Image (cartoon, rainbow, N blue to C red; front, side, top):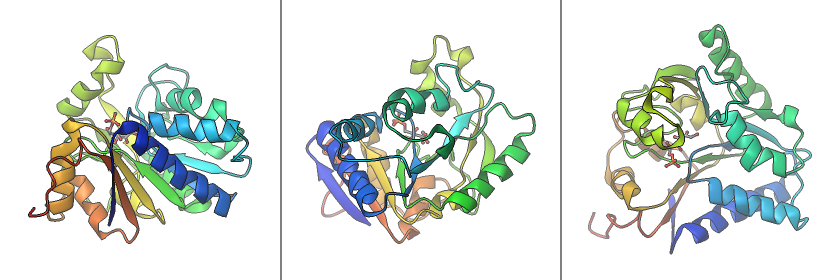
Length: 245
Ligand code: F6R
């Protein structure tokens, strides 16, 4: 695992965008695995900036998002499809049909999960997967206890994850209870994984990721066995890591 420590969130975002931009230069038909949430927002901003300067071209790029809430329509302002359109896809020249997000409104969610896993295999695996991390170590919506062998599946969100996401909704009741997420095994299919963490609320998760054993109670620990993992963390998120461990 490679660890890049940055001074702050802005530098973290620039670093992540630089890596993605150079991936696109190397392989214009790259497949990118993408995440939502607060952490990658700065990265998307930086990617849009370099696109606007004419430094990148998304016409041949495909994207696969990690997850989607169950029950929210694609145009609901808190759906992950809407988030991606607003913060990234609508601001670059990617053909919309090349952007994949699980369908949280599918009637048969088990079937939707298998369909999405098949898409990952058909158009992927991603050359590069961007990840955030939950304070409880979740990646995607894989909560503690998720099997490391899991493919795309439906998951019940823990109270702590619902609470953490409540800030985006008007009331707690509106926060969805279920999501469709790539599984841990699906995430591991990516050739390269970049995990971002910013802020002191992520420091304990980063400490556990770096020093802890692989443990299904801490989903991000599975990443330790991935052959090409880069952590980009700012100093606050790195604060509990020290040389002695
Ligand atoms: C989002 C996702 C989640 C987030 C995680 C951290 O697609 O898969 O695992 O990456 O909840 O969220 P933020 O970045 O908001 O702290």
